Length: 164
Image (cartoon, rainbow, N blue to C red; front, side):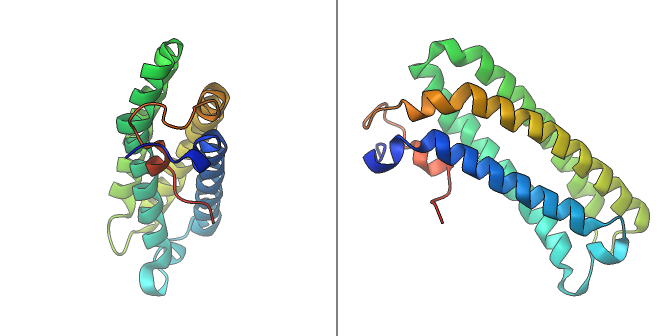
């Protein structure tokens, strides 16, 4: 599939919007966690599900960037290759923090120490993501927004959810 002309010019803007949504979701998780095991596993396990869902969405976002977005940009903008390599290293660090969070909250009845550990890992994840997202937005948004319809053979819109 090729790029969709009506969306190509806005891919950089959409990337920022996706990052903003991920920031908000992570902030809500951290706020709702509140350091209590009861908050993590209230009826229906909604916070636990939210936590695991967030980790899955973030992992998929980074996997799509690594497999689709970054290779396309590297081909079109060779000057960005060092930036893309750095962003991939960040993705590896994020993946490690996500594994740690999943390990801590993977139990249906995490105890207080697991919840406190998850809260600490989420704090670290938030700090890393804020730096990562800001850097990625500064370095890639202009290149993404400058793409022309039909540029490359990759549909970059698949790595971004459709607008609300």
